[in-house]
Length: 216
Image 1 (cartoon, helix red, strand yellow):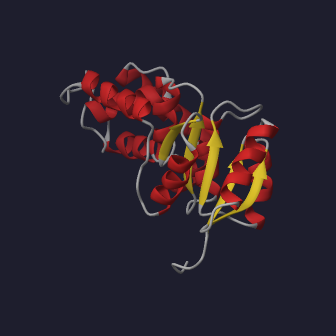
Image 2 (cartoon, rainbow, N blue to C red):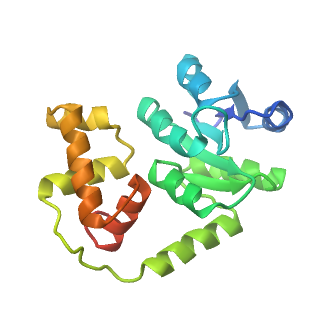
C-alpha cells in the first residue's frame, strides 16, 4: 500500500445508526475508505474476503458470535487485518479475551471522532491504541499478576507449544492439523493444561501461563 492510498476500513456493528455513523465519518475523511459494513461476525467471515480491509472496527456485543470470540476467527481467516475493538463498557474479561485472541487495539464507543480516526491510522501503522479507561484495566491486570510464579505441576514442552498456539488464536482444528493428531486428542491436552494451571477458560489459562513465565 502506497502512502497515497487510503486506509481501507471495514465495520462490524449490529446497530444500524452506529454502523452508518461510523461509515459516514470514515468515508468523509481524506485518507480513509470504508470497504465493507457488516451486522455480525458471521456475515463478515462470509463476505469480507471480497474486499479485505487494512483495519476492522469490531463491536464486542453482537448477536451470534460475540466480538471477543469473533476476533480469533477473523484473524485466523484474515491474518493481515488489524482489528480495533469497540465497546460501551470497559469489561475486564472481555478486554483480556479480545487481546489474547488477536485484537490490536481497544476503544470505548464514546471516543471522540478525531481520536477514532487517529486510532485507525495508529493501528494500521503497527500501534496498539487504547482508550485511557481500557489501558488502566490492562495495567491493573498486570499489576495483579505480580512476578512470575511456578505452577504446581510443570507443563510438558508439547503442552507449552500447544498453549502458545492457543494464545495466538489458533483453533482446536488448526492445532490438530499442526501436530497431526485428532481433535479429540487436542481437547485432552487442553483439559490437562487447564487442570495443571487450575484454569477454567482459555483466557485464564493464558493469563496464568504468562504469569508463570511459561509463554511470552
